[in-house]
Length: 100
Image 1 (tube, one colour):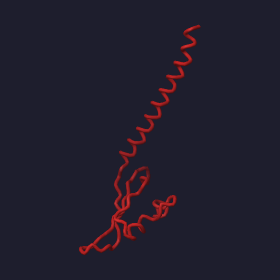
Image 2 (image 1 turned 120 degrees about the vertical axis):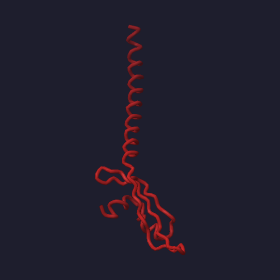
Image 3 (image 1 turned 135 degrees about the horizontal axis):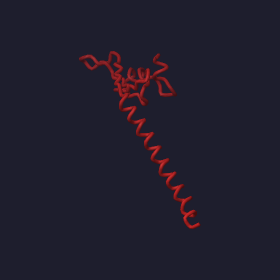
Image 4 (image 1 turned 45 degrees about the horizontal axis):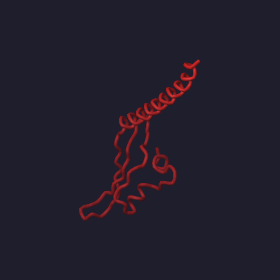
C-alpha cells in the first residue's frame, strides 16, 4: 500500500506532515488492515541529543486479536438485541392466543 492509500483516507491530512510540523506524536484513528491483519499505527518524531527533530518513526503494532475480539463482541451484542426483540414479539403474539 502507498502512504496515500493507507493514511490519507478522508480529509484527515498526512500524519507524516503533521509530525514534521511540530506535533509530538500522531495516532492513526482507524486500524490499518493489511492482508487480513489489523495494525495500530502511530507516528513519533525522531529527535537527536539536543532535542532537534530529524524526521519521524512510524510504529505499527499488530492488534489483530484485539480487533477480532471487538468484532465478535459487536456481533454478540447484535444477536442478543435481536433475541430480546424476538422474545418480546413472541410474548405479544402469545398473550392474545392464550386468551382464545
